[in-house]
Length: 77
Image (cartoon, rainbow, N blue to C red):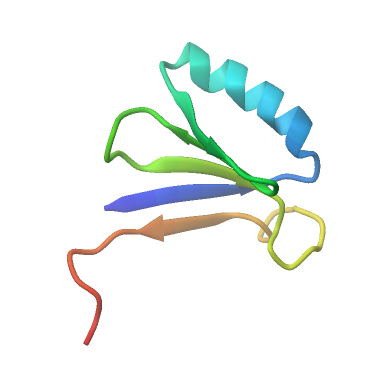
């Protein structure tokens, strides 16, 4: 049911080094990298963990940059 979990970061380069090592040790891999976001996965079609600078441009902290996205079978009509 969970599609992804997003973690806010104020320093994406340092976060990348940390999460590359952590998730690599847990058999995860970097799925893709963008200017403001890095995505990790542990298997195809499994929930992803995203590390990103907050979209609003403010500092990442509890409640800003953190999100859990749920997947659903269908979009509401």
